[in-house]
Length: 64
Image (cartoon, rainbow, N blue to C red):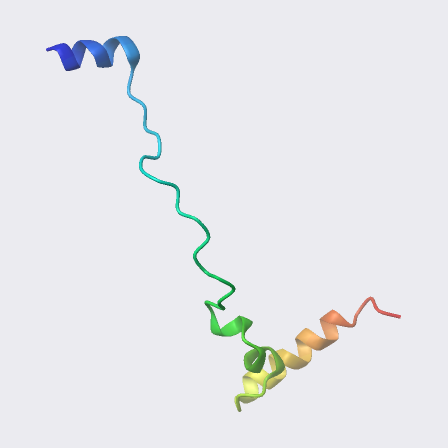
């Protein structure tokens, strides 16, 4: 009954518990889409080459 009374008086707090995790990726690339071969379309897929062409066009769109 004591726990119930303290909950009534103070409410329930749903805060994150435990230690805070630090950035653990250490500069690693997690997805294939961010790797250089996939960005440049160099891994052999025709669709990837097409997407790389569109990415290059988009990147150069506002450059003079």
